Length: 140
Image (cartoon, rainbow, N blue to C red; front, side, top):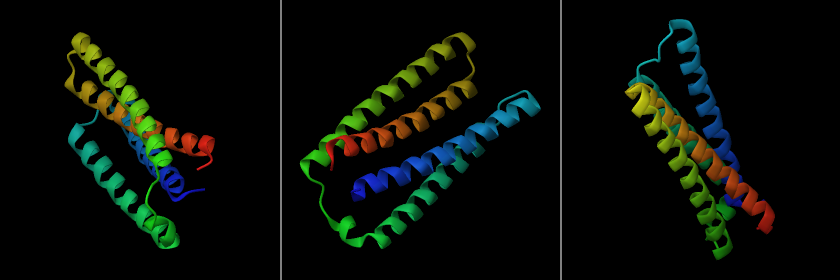
C-alpha cells in the first residue's frame, strides 16, 4: 500500500468520523427540539475538529513512514487523484444544486447550509474512496 493510499484511508476515516458525528448531533437536536441547531457552532466544531484530526493523522503517518512521505508522486498517482477529484466535484455539484432547488421551495437558509455542508462531507468522502479504489485497481 502506497503512502498516498494510506493517507487516503486515514482522511476517509477522519472525514467519515467527523461527518457522521456532526450529522448525528444535528439529527438528535432536530428530534429533541423540533428545529435545526444554529449553524455557526456546528460549522466551527466541524471545521476545527476536522482540521485538528487531519493534522494529527498526517503527522502520525509521516512519522511512521518517513521515507514514503518524502517520495514524489508519479504520473499514475496524479491521474488517479485527478479522476477522484473530478468525481467528487460532480457529487458536490449535484448536492449543492439539490440544496438550491430545495431552497427555492422551502426558503430556509439553515436547511440550505446543512444540505451544502452534508454535500461537502459526502463529496470529500467520495474523493478519498475514489483514490483508494484507483490505487487498488492500478496496483500503485
